[in-house]
Length: 65
Image (tube, rainbow, N blue to C red):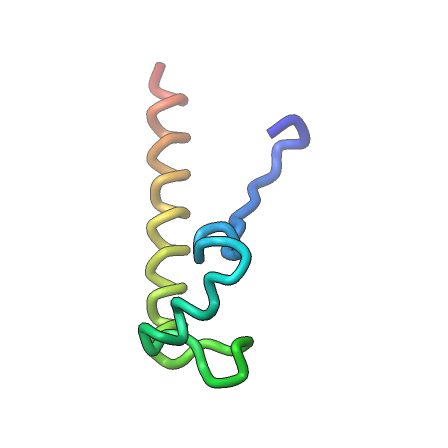
């Protein structure tokens, strides 16, 4: 926040190093261990939306103080 920018680390949110295997086992990643499945991309979108909304709510709460 020192530079007033946001960062959303999907690698960390997925579970970090090696987590793509778990995503593949859960049918959220494809056989290439790189791309997600439709369900995986839908989950990624939902997680990003929740993170954005939480950031917005945190901002609103801070502004109201």
